[in-house]
Length: 399
Image (cartoon, rainbow, N blue to C red; front, side, top):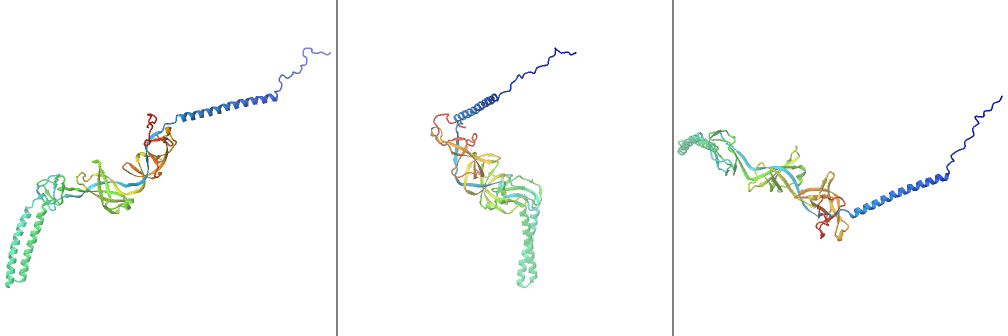
């Protein structure tokens, strides 16, 4: 028996609900997207161009006002050449006064710190023993002289031999020599000044027993001084007797003294490789004193054909020294001459009286900024103070 299921009929196939997208619609979508991107990029580029032009216009209308500076047109010429050194002032004549013989101090006739002349008596040592010896030898000389005269008469008469006459002459000569020796010793008991000068501090007292060579006082002539100093051996070819030396001391910082080189040591110190020199000073006003520390400048023959600048014109850095050269620039308002600062590296040399030698980097005729460098930079517009200025106030800011 066959049964037919009337409840579960066989399902029919389901028709597709989405049709494939056409190729034309996709192309239109890409085109629209591309146009949008082009418009966005164009807007950005246009905005940047507009912004840059606006900034240029802003800075063009608001550029920094020119800076007023002083300048100097450089020219080659002579410039002092100087060697610097340090040294000590000393006296040409200086001595420690000492007795040549032992003795007790009977008196001293000097005042510490006072002036004395050559030959003035300073100290008298006791010489009583020597005076007694002198009287004794004078008596012996007197007797020997009488004996010698008698022998000469007897010799003429033939009553005395030549030997007797020679003996009498010898006794007279011995007595005369003894007198001379004692007189020399007595002279040593009187201590005198060996030259003109100023005495130092007294080192003795009356009644003190002095030995030969013991210090009594110092004597210094401060009218003629010298300064001793050293220079590197490289300076030797440029040194000569009679060259001028300028010196300053701490006691007189605003005063410059002059000396002349008098001695150049022929030997160079093997330890320091330096040359020792002495320069004499005429200390007529006695301002300088021995022992002073001195700063020295040895004045050599000047350099020729050298460019110099005020030291204020230079800027210093780890990379070297620079200056600003004022080059011609566009004319300013009202046709006023304008210049442009150009930073230039230079090589420097000696310094003297606020100026410095420039050995390379500049040439004669260059105009260099000497003041007003604080706000300058490479390319700054500058106005020269030595040029005619505008009559309207506040048009030119002064740095």
